[in-house]
Structures are given as C-alpha cells and as structure tokens.
Image 1 (cartoon, one colour):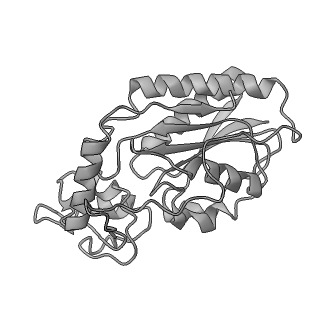
Image 2: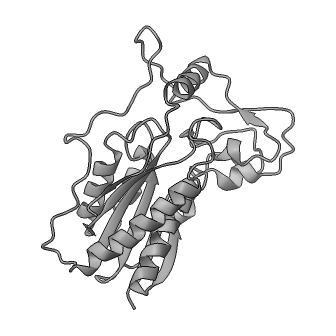
Length: 271
C-alpha cells in the first residue's frame, strides 16, 4: 500500500522533528500510513527503503555552509527513488543559500519527482542561543500546515509531466559558505574538533550519537575520523563535557550570534 516516508539526517533532532510534523500531516490528509527512515548514523547509510511509484517521501537534511552536507553526497546520490518527493532543509537562522535547490536536484537525479519544498529553521549546531529551541511550537504548526498543503497539491493530480518544484537558489551552486574575520580573512574550521573536560565520565553517549562514527566507544577522548561540527556530541552530553576552544571557531560562533538575531521564518515552495 502506498505510504508517506519521512527520510532524514538529523544529528541533534531538529530536522527529524520538522520532517515528522510534515510527514504525519501529509499522511493524515491522504489517509496513508507514515514510516520513517533515519540515515543519521553510519550503519543506516548502507541502505534505504524500496520506494514505490505511489509513495511520497519527505526528505530532510540540515544545511552546512549553505549547502547539503558534502559528507552525505556519496550516499544521497546512490539512492534509487520513485514517486513524489518533498525536499526540506533546516538551517540555523543565517541562510540556506543553495542547499534547497541542491537537494531538489539530487532527488530528481535519484528518480524522485519533487512537488513541493520548504526551508525551516532549527537551533544552530554551534550555539544554544542562535535560533534557540527551534523548531518551536510555531514552526511545528507551520510544518503541519505545509504537510496539508502538500497533500492538496498532490491530490490535484501527481504525474511525471508535472514541472519539478521551483525553489530559491542559484545554478551553478555557490561554493560552500566560508566565515571571515573582521578584516575579510577567511576562517578555516574544517579540521577543528571539540575538546573534552574532566567532567567526562566515559558514558559513551557521544560515540553513540556521532553521525560520522568518529568517536570510539572504548576511548571517547579520541577521534578516529572527521568532525562535521553537527553539535550532536556537545548538545547530547549529560555532563556538558565537550566544548570548542579554537579561536576561529569561537569568533565565528560569536559573530553568528550577534548578526542573526532576527527571527527567520520558514519558506514554502510549490504550494
């Protein structure tokens, strides 16, 4: 039986909350079942659902440096899609730049046909202040409304001859957003990793939630892979033991918190 899928990468849970609200509302309007596929952790990126032509997939990723996270591209480009898809990106109140148009194009290339799309806001991975607590109740209400509007769009007659959803963004895509200092010099934080305080008791939660599998559970003070600055190990540590001390990272974080205080609102496309 045709269903609605919620499929997402969500290191701190913000993309998951948003996709779930959209997907459940969409499924409810169409009287379909709702299923989820969470590909946040490494083992889940070894597969994907077997999509059918009558399925609808709400597909969510966070925005990193204004684009779809580049570490996900090998996985995303190997998914074999079918049916309708709804690309959704979540950003930390700065901007989503070309992430949404990039995700739309990836899904179209995978074999999906995109019918609506949206950009939502979630608490920034670097900060507990920037877009704090989002998606909040207002965002979730808007996500549900978007899901219902998407159902209406689908019911008007889904077909492969429909134009793919037009979204905001540039082609060719802009290069990944690079932070700069007050003199215009670039700040490179790609290799920066969190430090660990003595409050760490070795519980292993950080190893369990790291989406890159870069923290070994047998020694959580070690890194065996890359860090994408997703915030999972910091925000989910019950002891608050992980932190950054890199000067460039901290400067960029403070600039973001100072410059992007105005509340951004979700944007919908195709409805």
